[in-house]
Length: 209
Image (cartoon, rainbow, N blue to C red; front, side, top):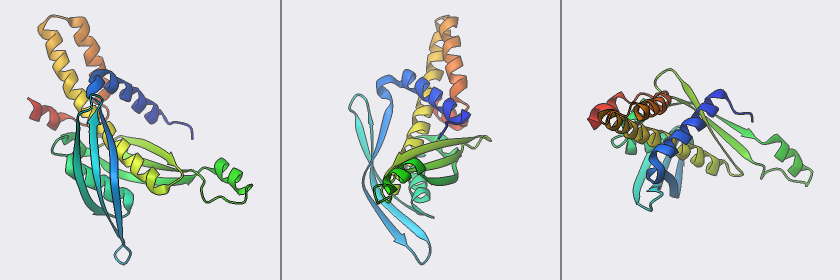
């Protein structure tokens, strides 16, 4: 599917985050996912281990437990609940909607071989950033569960790293200004202005003072 303008903007911001955080950029992965479906009351429970590590090899594991209306809702809410004390801007986020699409080209190709059940699927999440903007995220996989898990952790990973980059840029701006380096301060402010469009970092900045 063709990328939307918001997706292009998000990818540009991801590049800024990578440049600012370098080896301190965090990478998320899920281990040992357990899904429990309560069919009668339409609730889904999830349990898993979230591994968060940076490019320097430092890592920390979180035990994640939660529930919601389906896997996406349950996992998204469980991750935000667990991480919001460390990343305050996560409290602004809302899962607005999601879509599941089958790769039609892949499906037609597989049907010619007499099967189609292992066609790729794409999961799309629309995140309300709490500031009037809807930001899309996608993941593609042959497994709907794997695609669902991947798109959720990539979404949360993006916003966590964005907050860390915003806090780092604020420090860099202050440092450049104290050294009368207007050129560097202007460069960092430009990067900062791009990232603050992701969501509100007001509470995070206050707590970091």
